[in-house]
Image 1 (cartoon, rainbow, N blue to C red):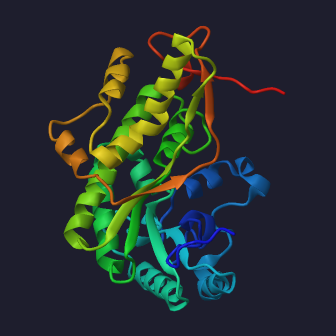
Image 2: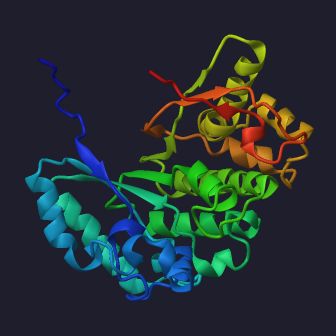
Length: 324
């Protein structure tokens, strides 16, 4: 029989946009999801939008009791940036009261809250300025993070900055699954770079506000398997790992981007706009722990007719299937 340590955490994870509902009430401003649903509701399953979720905003006390009933001793969720700071600057006291009561209700059930800051719900006021494509997003996220730490640090001892940050890069700027549904590799690189800086800005604020507590980042790590030992297949696998894993993992662990990744994107004219102090900021983004989400491996082979310079990640590697 397998046994687990007495302090092992059994939990579940979700997010503000998936659960809260009340998406345009309680002082909250619109996110990209609110805007997109208003513009194209047919893109949402059964045309169910962000207002009609599991309605945790109204039922969180009962939900916390259910968490304890099923045996959870930890629970990860997120804060809605657009609820806490509806215009990016003004603190919404109704949101402060809600989250404090919510987090206390979690603790009252003997459950450890792990609170994430960003789970794909970009405030629309910032999206209208370019979202993470705009340099302004770095300072804006840092302010939001500091505000959250100051408001809830006495109730929350474990924090994360981003959930699966590569997802809002890929889905919003390469494959059209999230707003703004842009297909532009260079913009995607810029968004990813500013996300890394925003993460580091948040970690730096955390070290000042809550130096005795722990902060991490949640990454969906996808290990790559090459189709063969052929040099081109091996190179495709290496690049896949650089783009999909090391791009966020290395800065979180080592405080810097891999040299090979920097050289790769420069060769293909994809280098983002940077500032001189960025390396020093990235060094501040080293975390205390990594949240690891694992879904599946990535199986790649060399592409047949890649664009040079690359226009999409698939110009570096092509997927293959195992049959049988």
